[in-house]
Amino acid sequence: GAVVSQHPSRVICKSGTSVKIECRSLDFQATTMFWYRQFPKQSLMLMATSNEGSKATYEQGVEKDKFLINHASLTLSTLTVTSAHPEDSSFYICSAEKAISYEQYFGPGTRLTVT
Amino acid sequence: GQQVMQIPQYQHVQEGEDFTTYCNSSTTLSNIQWYKQRPGGHPVFLIQLVKSGEVKKQKRLTFQFGEAKKNSSLHITATQTTDVGTYFCAGRNTGGFKTIFGAGTRLFVKA
Image 1 (cartoon, rainbow over the protein chains, first blue to last red):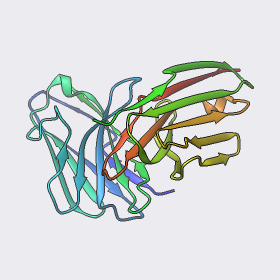
Image 2: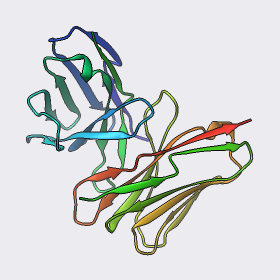
Image 3: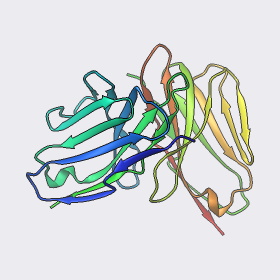
Image 4: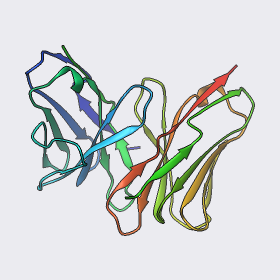
């Protein structure tokens, strides 16, 4: 299977600061990457679809100014949580989609804790 | 909008028993994918079904895609403790660019 890395795996930050999470597809090029949020024992909540070279498409209810997404290359997408608040604490997972097959390969996730 | 419903939410089984999770879409799908997430881990792609009525097997796992391409199921024969985790279906609607995940079914296997 394909490999997707995510960095950092865990981060603790103070309220009001910004945090950047990187998602990389290591062995294939991904035109499309997805960012999800997952609460404990719950399903994946799609936050946004990141397309290389264009603006991300955000799901309803997700603030685009708060969750900045940049997909600068075919192997890297970043999610920046700006002015983080404790309610932003969550598990953030990215996935990279393989063209044609649309199979998604997930990164290991980032556990964000905002104090 | 498109919805993908998955049942049951939880399933407790004794090791050796069979297990099935069901997925239903409100719209016709172009494909259905299945993922497994182990406790503490991330979702891992298992399989994709594309054709109407398609059935695929992976060892003890059997995946089916309905004739109308609106439902799917995953059946595990003779569960083992290694099958523990959450199984998600994910459907892509015809003509769309979005894959919608079901809520997942958490499988607990008692040895």
